[in-house]
Length: 214
Image (cartoon, rainbow, N blue to C red; front, top):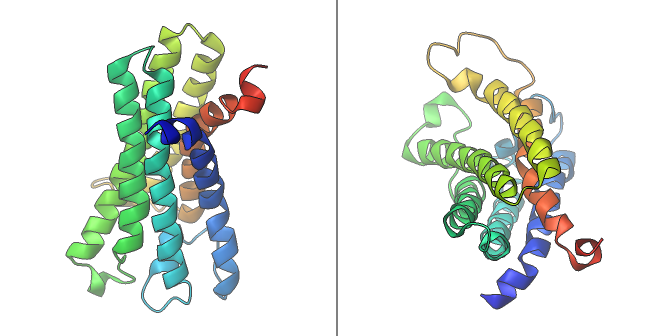
């Protein structure tokens, strides 16, 4: 555990960078793939040449997120034991829900293929997104307790932007609202993930030895 507490921030940084570059690397192997319109999980659908690579990539990234969680707990534990614990749990939920389960369970490529596995995939991914959004709120609370006003303001702005992009991404799946035609869903997914990762990425970078004492 001490090793994870010491190197967890490095693992988080690697995981975030890996997640952000994944669609641009795998997108080169699918003719006509649109980063703006198509979802990242399309890479793992049946028949895609990227299916195996995507699944392995996501399982590895999810494992890195889970292993990074103890570093966040250890860093904020003196500020608030309960809040630091729940922040770490949120990171674990994301790593398992949106990465590992995404890698293990196929997403339906058409309405005819929708079944338990596809529903589990969608539910786990949504739970992961929500977990990081809640985790951002917990980070805001922790920095408020530390009286770090600059980080509080920064994370509030990121929280609001992330929530906005999450709403745009989720609108087609929300009952009574899904009649609105929202285009560029792939873009909203990527921007949502970018701003979901950003608070944790900032914390990790700020606590690397090279930056910590500046």
